[in-house]
Amino acid sequence: MTAFSTEGQSDPTVQPVPASVVEQVDAADVTLSNPKPAVISLGSNLGNRLETLQGAIDALEDTPGLRVKAVSPVYETEPWGVAPGSQPSYFNAVIVVKTTLPPSSLLERGQAIEEAFDRVREERWGPRTIDVDIVAYADVVSDDPALTLPHPRAHERAFVLAPWHDIDPEAQLPGHGPVAELLGTIGRGGVHPRADLELRLPE
Image (cartoon, helix red, strand yellow):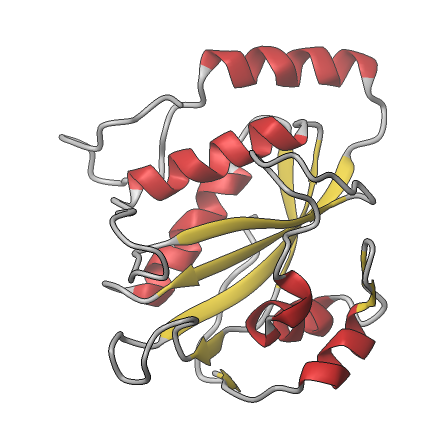
């Protein structure tokens, strides 16, 4: 994957799109009349968490062949898979996009945004400036190890299901059923709505 340098740039969210992605978008724009819906989960527990989430949303909007259609409320959640109190809490949100990018290129773009915000991958469940996860892409179900769709743990994560349900109460997680039912099963423990915080939909 292409790595981008932010040195000398005042805005780390404005990143070039790899030429390979641009080529795929151009091809898709010619051959695909209807863009596909995708659901993306965002999380941050280092630095200015709200600003970073908004920066990731804006960077996705700036991607050729992608438009952000809905942005969830912000939730504050305890880190997943680590001892309580061992890391700062997360700000989490979910966005719905329409895109002509294939899943592999959408993944590449998400990883490029993570790199732009200095995401470090030194340990599993480690703290991170930004986490960009593809939760679902249309009705695609795939066990490709490079990108499993839908996200293999989305159905058991309230910090994904709660904000997704807020922006699409009728949403379905492919292979698992209605998001409302999944959320009802696992509950909202550990996720707290932050009504005092707001992410904006890019104009």
